[in-house]
Image (cartoon, rainbow, N blue to C red; front, side, top):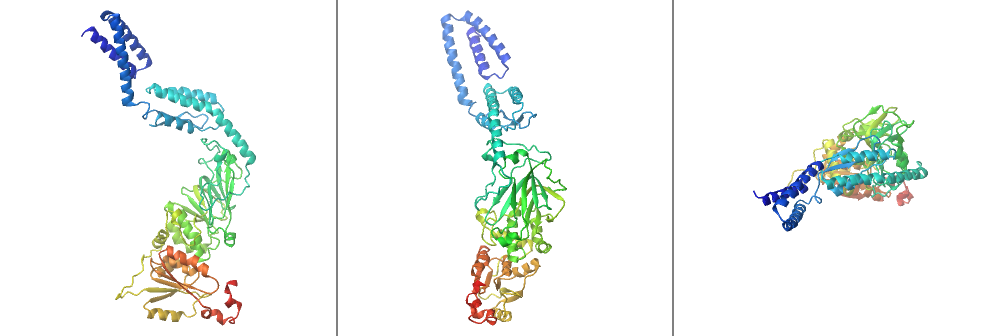
Length: 566
């Protein structure tokens, strides 16, 4: 091999070592010095000064061409780099947390800066020095660009710590002056389900605080409380302690969270008929309160539960069959169904008769024994719970699918499954068919009762119906089976017509509307819900001469002329 060939080979090795070598800096320097010595010796022996200069120009052009090819083909600064994403810990004495990531360098810089949590500025210079020293030794095989970029991120974070701490201190001082725990909760519109109390108004957007209180299970944020037209409810996560004797839900929080909060307590009546003062007066009020872990008023847990909880009231109008479904059962279905049975019910105003009446439905919604929470001396603790029931529509006995994952059809299927009801569709009557439709007449013994049930039954049989006369009682399961076996249900306006929820689809509801201005109630409570359930609806309005009131009052009495006043 000639000396020129040896020289070209050495040039090739030299440039490869410069652009592609992953050796240490010391090894690079030794190799460069060796090549320079060889270069000077061989160059002096083989080439004249003019040839040496010419060869140097060509070598420079070759070097630029190799570098250009490298950047075009591999794009090392535009593609993802396998480097370490550095995240600063919020603890004072903790080491730097390292997470493997393949994000681009620009994304890493943004994430690192945005995810830095500032708690205090004590020992900041010591921490910055430690972070700088550890960052320089994270990965010795990274490119020089990656190392300089990581150092730049850390330096930018370190220099901005003091500014963020000043902002945080000023925010806390402002909150301490303006925060009043006695302020009432802010109300939002029915369509607005955002958080009522937002602490981001005074704190830095990128700042996240750890819970520093003793005995706290995990970091606690303010409950997401929603105040709507028909119901109020709070969805809570954290260290939750329920004191039934004082009707209080305690949320263990750090003192930083409490100082930063706009409100520290909320009052909830967990019954889904807000706006009806008479009903809400019969509902016990509960307080949801943020409390520091070291507070003397914080009760100690006596029973810890591993499943979420839902606290609701069985007060209000729960003694009425219609309101039991419209105000409690349907909202309870919407609130608890997403848990698929892994939820426990806490019942306030829980009368034993009501719990026994609907135990089948509660058992279908929860695999755990419900707890009557009032007056209890033991403290029940949960990690997650909802105080109140979700009712996002003002329509009675209905579900609005536009803001719920469920339909009324889903609720009716749930009822059929819970009570083992067999029929999903009413019979179709065809010419020549021997099947006869089944009619159930809802009987009432007191007000708004049929006085000629016998005549109605006889006429219905002549028309081809099989007739059943039944009166609802506390046995919901047994009465549900009777209703489900029928194709037509007829009754005077009243709570008994609520049992239409057990009718098969495409069945018929016949509502007899008495005199007395009940037209609006009849339409709102039964006509509109029936259509949502895919039930055909008919009504018959009683005339004055057909009312039994003509036997009690003279024809010109105000009760008959204008019964809406009574």
